[in-house]
Length: 435
Picture 1 (cartoon, rainbow, N blue to C red):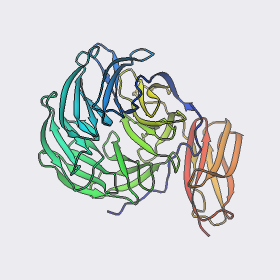
Picture 2: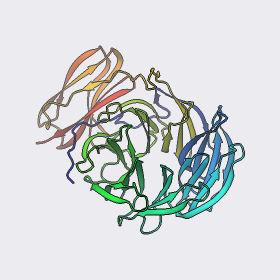
Picture 3: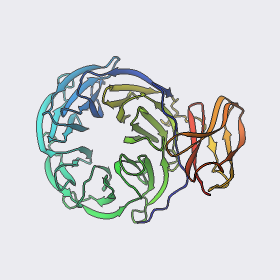
Picture 4: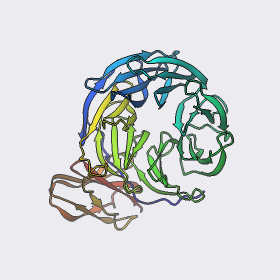
């Protein structure tokens, strides 16, 4: 299927992060009790009001339970793995399911979270797990590496009821009602599948895009838009698709942090999209009230390591992050003010208009608007590797609309990014230089 690609590119930064840079996001606790390294993370709110993080340990396939009700966090229990490779973790009620790339999926009960109990294991090895609608789905297992579907009628003994095998490796899935979206990470695109009968999934449509490496998928509250993050392929960022008509899927936007930085897992809570990033870029939060034009409202950069996942669903509002390769658990709070409808009062967005002309061979005009005066604004142009090729403004600037001239005549032909940054917010436009 041919995709209609929007020209707008949303980005938060195009320069390497310094250690522990942040905006509207505060680190309130951390714990690194295990040397194994960590993978995915989930959260659990017990009936007594206490809150817990559950983390998969990467290098041995184990799982740790950490009390995050008060700071500092405290490890409650650790369940060693088989020496395999832990990856994903999800929950169904008080039951934790965690995967191992080299062993069957394991189950732990948090019915008494102060004393977790190992229940057993089932199935075969799997890379990722998804839970939805009373079913558990495993992906990335042994050949043929499709999706295995288990009933959770008895959560302690999942029963295989169906599978979806398209003939290629599926890394992860998203379930929205009776529809499943599959991530064919090795250039196989995304399948839209009817799972109203889990015993007999039916392909609705398949869509793909150039250089695809679909790794993880999230949807907005309406289910009409999906956010696809690529871990491999020719562009390792998030692409936004309108799937309201599954037979006519269109790409309507992108979230590019930097052209060379890789996005990992995503979560959506209300009108907020939470993303974890490689290369020390940490946890990022985007307002997706307009699903086609996300606005970054908060971030916390770790400076090193990979933020595997950012989990935002605890009732207290705490946000949990899991760092792979040195870092362990991170606990954050968002500093944005909450409005009466339960969403954040998003700071007024910066406006950076598309360059004119675009493509450009000589000079282009860049017009932008600041909603209020700022002590420091920067307008710069970067190449596809994130290197600064021109700084058009640096310093204080008043509210209102401004314009700067950009001379592209001395630059090699190719794609560049104009970025406006001020007060922890950013707006980016792509421009093409031709000669």
